[in-house]
Length: 220
Ligand code: MN
Image 1 (cartoon, rainbow, N blue to C red):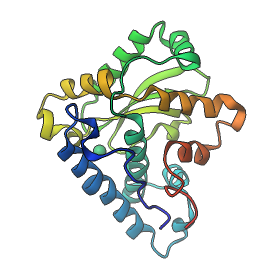
Image 2: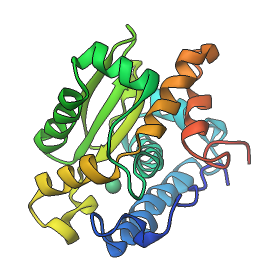
Image 3: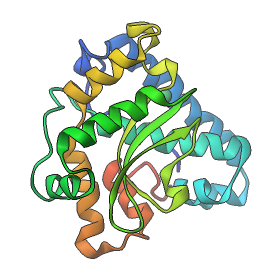
Image 4: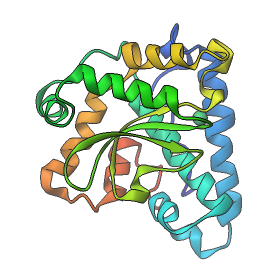
């Protein structure tokens, strides 16, 4: 079960009232696991079955890319949120944010604007770019910043399935709730640490495992 979906890191109702238990359950059980099932079917009996998720993201296209990237993106999204999250980053992450955005508030605002402004289905990201600066970005559909050589630090899912049951068309309210109450800045700091710790910003699989569980891309 090479591409088994990691367990959700909290209960379905843990993000309420900002994201309901029903939304989390459907999002995880039907969407995230659905991408996993399609990916498993697509690689069955093929050499791609031996690749890691990141290798698939960097080397495939079409349905294979979409499903591999969405498995990765969702595992990363669940870890980007936590009950009673929000607040402010501290320590080296805070310093890096101030160096790149001038203030934490600017960074949070940019991230929220990116999430609100992504035109269709997609993602907003806080990343470390190849020059060592933090940046906010958007991606469409399943696209992932590792395709550009960036290191993801946080992700916000802005596909409608992430918020429509709770917020209908009010994506902005969902984004504000995520930024103010759910983002896990400790997770972002841990992703930055792996790079800063000299483990190599090319060692993407290692980063991913830190952000997921060992079963996500580990050997079967
Ligand atoms: Mn989603």
